[in-house]
Image 1 (cartoon, rainbow, N blue to C red):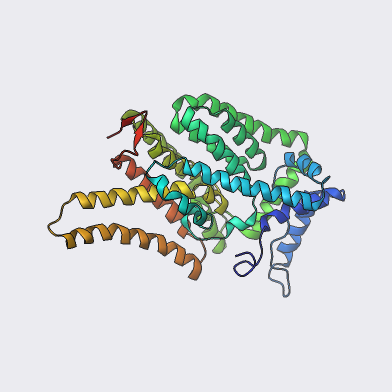
Image 2 (image 1 turned 60 degrees about the vertical axis):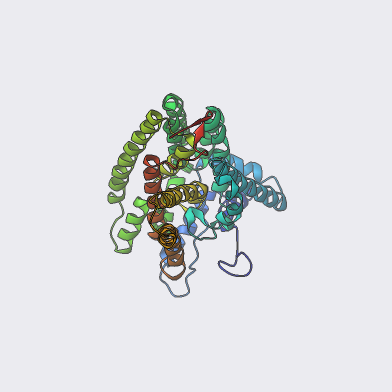
Length: 401
């Protein structure tokens, strides 16, 4: 994919921090350089011969600049090797964490699917794995720390990972809802961590006011240039409004508040039912994680890559229940039985193929991925009310029926 087709390149999301490191090596303000590049691109937009590619804009908060200054001390080859290793490690940690959500029957076939999952973020084909985005590192760290959280109720490393990731991207704080959905007693620790993350973000405004203003301006200019609102409900609405020449705000803000509020209520109700019904965590963890990520105001492809395995497990469990329900109907003849069994499989294949084909022959990702994400979450909610009855659905040695 990197050398023989598709984009024809890789590591495109590493250009921005690499360019910022070069600025710091030469004593240049990365934000000021980014603002100048974005302003030129916007002014030249539509002119004959104007450069079409996105300008190199550093989009991370001011607190990350000391880290870049430290990295600037090392030669380029060492940075490339270390960063490539970190991204690969983050990807493997994401897959490992997803594997921990499977029951013992799913673990028979899931290892064969994991290599393919890398190229289907959110179950829709894309080459985002080649981007080298720092989110792969951050999500790998977060999901790996979440495993001892839901298995042994040890969330300390998870909170540290979230706080560290929020230094790069403040929306990571929304993942603090995940422990609360699994254990309501985590309300206090999640709240303290969220408050700390917000204080760290606000402190940058007080410590480096000029750089912080420049950082916010770079974000604003990038939205003006690229209209990169993501693939969540707010992003789809913002993209649609901008294409029609209408302002994206405040409509997107109103939609996000309404959507996040309704989704939060649904998740809390589901978490209460899971506790009351004593359902196994294997069933609830993927649904809770997908629902939590839906709270992100700007869902990107690398965000969806982190929940591809949970989405696959939800889809498989729904299909398995449909197959078992069809088999339990005990139709008269084997041919009828075969037809009943083939229908859910055919429906699943069609539902998988439609968005993947659409991204190739139609407008990429808009709004197909959102529909896939919402459909999978709805299947997860439905599967909680209709759990598959097998020995894989057990906790503490008891079969949950």
